[in-house]
Length: 359
Image (cartoon, rainbow, N blue to C red; front, side, top):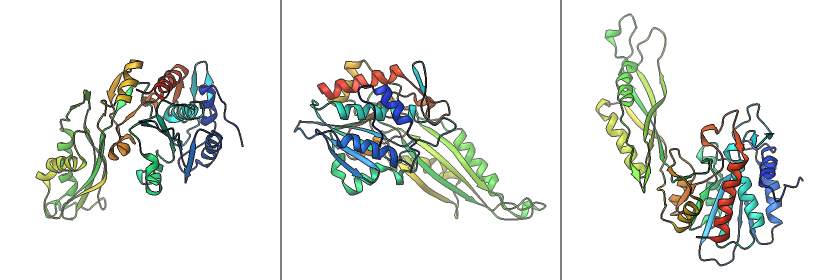
């Protein structure tokens, strides 16, 4: 089995990028990380499926959770690390092997942290939530995920992206009556009815609420439509899938009620409104002393996380959580994703200071 570089988080990142770890194909990288972490006498290591949890147990008053996912999206002619000057290209450089390398380096080198630390390396974040490794850990050993505050290494370009928005998907199906298109007045066109609903979505004025000083920008988008029977038949059913991104000052139930209120005027007997996915958001949690120390000592930009991340998982367990990682989120999952050395070094230095000195 290969040995990962030590003492250089840049080389460590390149080594991790060189190991292909598309979702569901993470066995090689997990086995290597498990071997490296089990070699550290100051850590207790548990493996659950393809997830690793390494912990210090020094009796400190507070516990920090540092987490990152080991999987990447499928490679797109960008497998393996390619370094050009101070920039590293390759699938996973942005999302999020730089963050994983930082976590692994801290786990191996900081033997006497100021706070107890739980390092969580989990599988299958880039696919449906039902497969997410955090859920697997929670189902078998939930106590391993306990902590006072959590930071996830999602790409944030070195800023602190506080909390996250919730995400909701609903499918609205409207009915009609079939008829021959030569005699459409004998039927009722469900797709034409859908046009009225799409007009509501298109005209939607999204909120921009401020939560704990962070401005979130909500959104409502039609992302999929279905309808039609044949080229000469008036359609009797049409469906639109709507995605709503909502700020963490609303619960999931409140978000569902809000979308229902928008479409309800068009709903008739036989029409359906089905929630197909709902993941609540997470409040920023900026009042926690460890997050405050991270921000103040490193003069970090603080902004709202406009997408959904697993910080919501920790927030749902009562743990304040934020995103903090070296990659640029605007290029995540692209063929040309890359990582700058300075981004990595700055993020690593900030987390090293927090683990070493606490709040």
